[in-house]
Length: 181
Image (cartoon, rainbow, N blue to C red):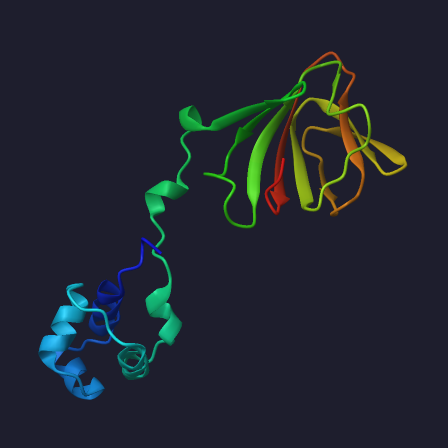
């Protein structure tokens, strides 16, 4: 909730409609002084005032209460990626963090390595794309050889495991929803 500035949103919607402060205040039946205080963050509007402003500006009332996205926080520089090592595998998180519904990472599987001894499952579904090398993927009772350029969708709760019993490292780009490792 720290990134919510109702006043700035009111001002943004007002300007998008081409209305002056006085025009909006008149249409919303509030004083220009009150509107000015709301837009400058000096006063918090009541729910009723928010409803009237929303109706006047033709926007949903909840739009004033949505958090602003800080776009610079969406960028992950290659030198600043979060790195994790779990068992023999290394992961580089391409997503900024584990918030939201999706995480994307690069998994590096060294030669003669497996993601685990046993098949594992998790509650999220996963899509993986082989960037480099070859890798054996176990899906339930089946096994598949995937090479660079191949991809796979792994449904939630399907037991699986990655195995690289080849002489070169494998690199796998994958996304999982919800984020879980």
